[in-house]
Length: 265
Image (cartoon, rainbow, N blue to C red; front, side, top):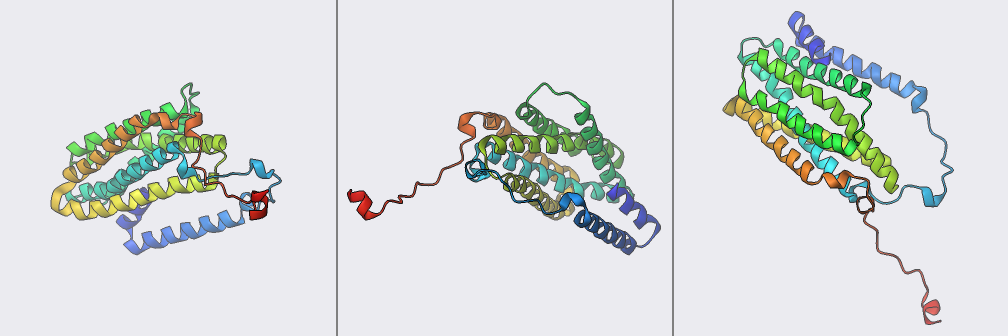
């Protein structure tokens, strides 16, 4: 709804009104978050030391697979966030840019709601691999059009994969850190950082490429990145499985705490 709201405000009022509305919504959301009982300070944990999280999540092969995948997914979405309004603008309908972005978000919402209603029998690792591949395939049609109407349809299809992909990734992260007893907060932060970093890089790259290369080649470059990420995920899919070899973080070298006198004895 955000892009659609912004586009509507720009169409009927000054662009400044859109910015002020966004700032007000962010401020209201921040206040609600801070005052929420769910964000109150948690009591100190009584968990025994041997059950406390240990090791770094990025030492897990599965975590590295997820983080690399999400860096690529974020990059593609960052490209689309710039390319879709560009397509609308060059078709003579700049206000349609918000509609195209709203269709991407709507697809994600529909995909997430549908995903949550299905009683899955497959494992999160299997679903993650399929979703990364499906996300890549849905980007392909956007390489072949520069018209707003088909671009909106294809953007909706891309969105269908987004929320399920995020849900499955965080389920996988939870399974990996729980089984390996590594730090869950750090693990989730790595995934968010990869996605946000990829998004920023994709937006910047699209801004540089669109004027000189056009939307078709720009989105094709993003598709190439998505394809590489999909191949990597398929090749490394075994790292996502909860097996002993995938759950052992790199251990630090043991420290010799014996004194010289004890050593001699």
